[in-house]
Image: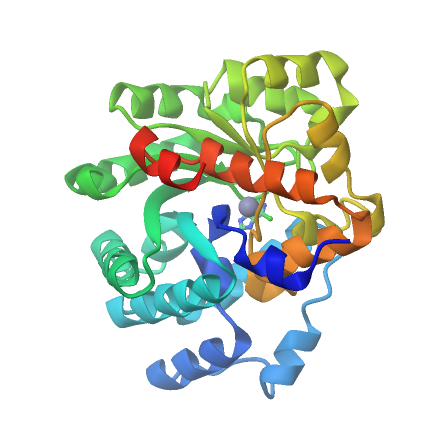
Length: 326
Ligand code: ES4
Ligand code: ZN
């Protein structure tokens, strides 16, 4: 059994984190107050009690509703800063953060407001906490590909501050293929691509993320284990999986953490990493994901070290920066 101290000191990365998913009920209420928004919940406890999800969609409904209080640059800054302080306390040294511009531009919040708030907090966080960062623009897959193209158009003046693109939201019925042309354009622009695949969707969606979208990393990807040929391909190409154990349990991908296949992924030779996804909604930041997995799965020191190394390896840090941690 590893000691809590040793685990706390392990240098951690976070490569699968939706910044909108770090909106804690306390901040959500404070921002509602800031903007004079009425909430359909009496208090913080009533809101938290609603975080009882049956699947991905039931979570997304609340997640998009919650994001409605994010309106000003200060809101996005405060949100991101609170997350970085929390991550720092967990021993996180590098973050690659998703944001969902369409959730905000659809409500009239300008793209630049969102980006400026998040970016300013990331830059400050680098100085204050020593946390390095990348920022990944995610397209919402439940919307048409044309909406994604319009969002990319809005992003063009800011590409110097966007490090890559991703694909998130409702997976079932929205295969990666739907975004083949959009991702081809993003690759032409030099943007590295990732996509959520194999969370609720079948292994076929992971194949499509690889072959149609040409992603360099798979977000979740746990259902790849159902297809041995796919597992072999992911291992051979060393395509990292950004696994989110507590998210998977909360969204009922697995009935409990003891049934989570994190160890199987490692044993299959996959570059699996540990991440928190939407920690304000899923009951644990990344440190808690590590502790809970170590405990529920009885992970060894060697397995935990491998997961930490995988996180550095799977990151988009330049080789010299990786060498500092490896
Ligand atoms: C998400 Cl857990 C998850 N899956 C897909 N899309 C998302 N957006 C925020 N969290
Ligand atoms: Zn996610």
